[in-house]
Image (cartoon, rainbow over all chains, first blue to last red; front, side, top):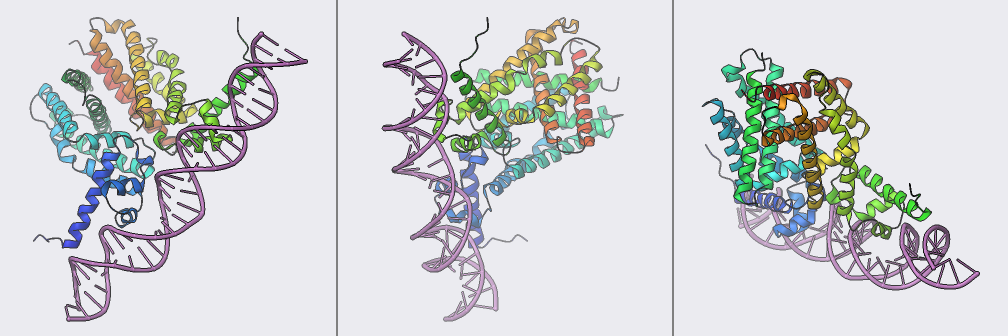
Length: 208
Length: 208
DNA sequence: AATTCCAGAGAACAGTTGTTAACTGGATGA
DNA sequence: TCATCCAGTTAACAACTGTTCTCTGGAATT
């Protein structure tokens, strides 16, 4: 049984989404700590005070953006490190998946890369928590692989973090190459592929 | 023949340094894109207009901070990846060196981590250029190692970037653990050590 | 000793900011 | 139908912003 939202609730959610969209656009050329409340309401086309009906502060809006940007990413992570195919295929698939996501959600990627170490503590904390969850999901996926036999939990989590960080670095490189000629994106693909390959090799000989 | 600066030049440099120091402190809890010119002059204790005698804008000040934070780091990088000792010793030495640098220059590390993907284009560019130089120096150091025999230039640079990024990630983790109990810093040391170990293993079997 | 130079001060500018309080009018539920 | 609710509006506030122009007093140069 699904519950249809009333006209009121629906309109409120619509406005809220307009805030998130406008903020994300404005944040392409600045950091969250310099994003003004009035700036956002102006972009949305509502009165400044309307902001308070949805968020306590711009920091609060930032946390909501983290959920939007990373929340929908969990299913993709599973696929990225899934155990289908040999390692070379898996690497190629992972890099392509990252490139695709950056191409379709550039503003989200930029926001996460920017605010991960940014000047707003609650937002940093929210990103940290989500990435921790990511690492644990990757770890769970890695544990399924027969290659993980004999690995300690700590070592698996160590490897998972390495993969997650590498994913972010690669995404950020693709982002910088977004407006550049195709040749530049190909260079990033090559680099990321070989770095992942090296990690995979190290993984294969870890227990020697 | 060294040239003693005149009273005038000396005083100017002193004020300029006061600007850099004050900005670095203010930037511990915000991003450069939200740093106000008046805010900095207030912290230094001079009139707002004095700012223009030293910098065109806060972005310009940011670029100067990049040079201060990363320029003095080049000698250390050499030592980090120097070819003395076996690989396990080298890894331990590198991690300790990073931990030490974070402990003595936390604000510098925070600034670089924050503004690398921050909202001010010229500053991002300056950091990117310096990190590129770092990677090339690391590559040159790696090339000296007998283990590098048979490696292509591209692969060496690929590995160098992997090391540089890993250095930054580790530094950032140490930074977050700075105020935490010693136990937390030990955890970071363990994690970074094992990640570097895995990369080293991959490096050893790269040509298989 | 006389002149030039220039880091920093002072005052003023038009715009901007976050936050408050009191309001309106259409959706909601009795 | 009528009272209640609440997303968004309007107006006003003191405080702050970057930038301009003009001035000053001590260092630097001649």
